[in-house]
Amino acid sequence: MVVCICNAIREKDLRAAARKGAQTPSMAYAQMGCRARCGQCVSFAREIIKTEAATA
Image (cartoon, rainbow, N blue to C red; front, side, top):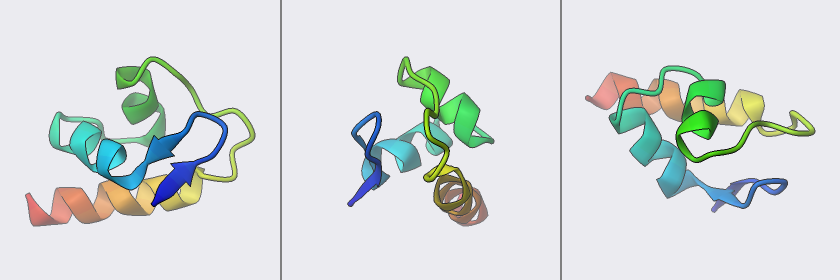
C-alpha cells in the first residue's frame, strides 16, 4: 500500500525504515532521502512506525 503519494513511499519501505531505527516519520523519510511534503501521510506513517516498534 502507498503511504505517501508525494514521495511514492510504500508501507513496506516505512516498516523497513522503522526496523533500521527511525522513530518518527521525518527520520524514516530522511533515511529514504526525502521529506513529507503535504503532510497527509504523517499520522498514518506515525502509526505504522509505532506498530513496528511494538513488534520489535
